[in-house]
Structure formats: C-alpha cells, structure tokens
Image: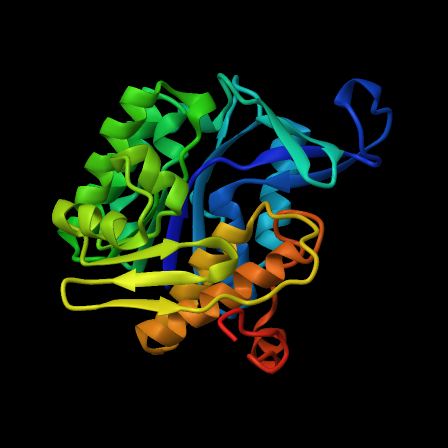
Length: 316
C-alpha cells in the first residue's frame, strides 16, 4: 500500500443557484472530506491508497463507501456504525467570492472512530501515512484513533505526512493548538498554509512558520502560499516553488488536498522534492478549475500532458 489516510467523508449538498441557503430549493448531492479527497486524487494518479473511516448503516454511508471504492481506493478498513448516522454538510454560495460551509456532523459515525478501529497489520504495509488535523477534532475517541495510527507508523518507521487543516468550528482554539502542535512533533512532513502558521505560531512569514515546525521535530515543511505556490524547508534549505496561474478559480475547496496528493505522488514516483512540490502546485491548481471537491483531480495521463507551458508560471 502506498498511502493510508483516515478521516470522515460526509454527504455534500450544494444549491443549484447562488444566494442565501434559506432560498435554495434544489441541490446537487456529492461527497466531501479532506482525507477522501487526498485518497481519490492519489488513486487517479495510479497509486495504491486506502481510506480508514466509519459510516452509518444508512443509504448515505453505503453511497459514500461505494463511491470511494469505485474511484479505486481500498475501503476494506471502513467500518459501519449501527447507531450513528453518516454526517452531512451544505455548501452555501452567496456569490462568486463568498462561499460558506455548514456542517451537520456532531455525533456522526466517523466521530465514533476509536483506537481499536486501526488495524496494525494493515497499516504496517504502508509507504506513507497521511493525517489531517480534522480527524482529531471530531471527538476524543477519534483523536485516540489518530494517536494509534501515529504510534503504528512510528513503530514501523513509516513517514507521517501531516496537513494541520484547522477547523475552528469543531473545537476550541486552545485545544486545537495543543493537539495539532503535538501531532506535528511526530510528523515527518508537515504541510501548513500561511493561515495555519498564523493560528498555531502567530507567524505569517513562510520561513518562520517552517522554522517553528522544524524546531518542533518535522524533517520537511512545505508551506503553501496560494497562487504564489509553496516553499519547502528543511534544516539545510528554504526553496520557493512558483505556483500555477489560474485565470478563473471555480471552486477552491479541495485545492489543499490536491496539493498533498500531488506531493505524495511525486515522492512515490521518485521525483525530487522540488519536482514533487511542482506537481503538488499543478494538481492543486487543476482542482480549483472544476466545481466540486474531487471532480477536478486529474488522472495520471492528464497530469503528465500539462507543463509550465500550459499554465503560466506566476513568477514570470
């Protein structure tokens, strides 16, 4: 198995027209979740990836599992909770530059994840473990599941890739800072955005953010700076990788997950760190050009046909 990730996928309802959610009468039903986005993006890039989660014994849970499995992701570690429901959320598009997310996930099946749900024999065969900061925010037991996953990865010397993915609506800011910085101490690679660096360390300079994570224990930090691309930082270097110019962002949701998948794909394909971040920028850019969380994630053949000649390098 190339990558294993764990987290919640919910049913996503998006109004068919812009405006306040109260006036919406028709919706499109899709699925959304950061870890699912990463898993599907990796599967489309021809990597073996597994998703660990829990869903409700309901039509939404069955639909999610079938959908993700249909995308080529291993769902053998997805459990069914007989009592808790599958989570739901709504995307409210008030106008092109004002999108709001409304979650209905408290007490969901995925929030019932616990340490015993993580199978050591299964995880031990992974090349990478991907963790999002969303999962430990779901509940105390979900946080315990994350720590179990971390423990197994450390025991078997599996690199841990951590995206802090701060969700303030899910827990208090003080607990979020404590838990996320503790997880970052155990991570091999950390992928924060500037806003997350500001939240965790009160720093908004990419180099200073990276230095905080390096000092915390990470070997490599990749700091995302939006359209300008990203910086990768280790103890020995701090390098900027220019972003990809996108003329029109259709939907920014999923861009960070595409970025994570692109980087992991590059590493699995034995690319350099620079080329892996370059691929991450490209996958993230492509994700923003299509409506939906995963609909814009490219397949391998499609990805390889693009080059910096196709999308303008924003450093020019």
